[in-house]
Length: 354
Image (cartoon, rainbow, N blue to C red; front, side, top):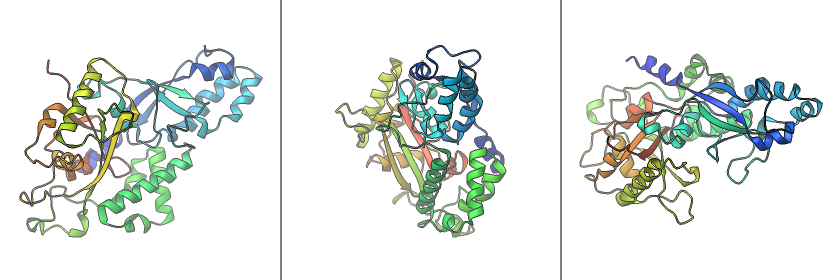
């Protein structure tokens, strides 16, 4: 498939979402947990590569404000006091990290995603009161999200190229176009600038002598990768690192047990590990492209290159797709990208064989 066509397909990936107002918030605003017709639910499509703060203005304008305006003068007055930064989302009792891409949140928390059994629409609870400041970064406004996104793009640029020069050299108008393209989900606007930050290169090429025909300036020094893996630790330490091959397999077993019992995933138990992944393997396999399995071994300090128990025990998800462990990381970063230029990989228990 043409790389541009593949990028557009990934960009256009959507998650249908069903929103319900939290009962406690409904009682406070409307003096009733039962919302008036037709405001019980609100449906919308959210791009996988986008972020929840970019939908809050639309949710407020098209759902909350009309609902409160039709419910009486007190509620209408309360509507004016609801700010974007008051709104937060919850799934199965878990406040959703608003600075994570929507697709990443879905892959982390929907237990059946690895089985290919999608929960659609994704049913979320919307809150406008009692922001959980102990669990979420405060102030999830559109502007705050734009600022955080640019910081993440600069971080990924540094990992890729050893400096933030590509991003810092962007004109202010280019930075605004990148952000506007993301917020409005405009492929043309976003990718016109993305191509400057992440120049197109042959993902099959490596910095070895055999790839001398490719300009080295187009090849990144490393790929910015983040692994998200459920911690098996039950010692009160949130997101404790699994640690080695045995730890990774223990995590897989714990996640499998949780999935089998349909137990809700606890987001605080995810261990997030970030590392710069080289394009090629270290000696003695020098010159061969780094695979997802290689990156996983680096991340979780699995020193034995022959150790592969996690391959059969775990599934690696990216953009909702189960990725083969032998996939080259450079190709994956170019193909199943997220807007912040990081490669986000969620490792979950493999579904049981039927």
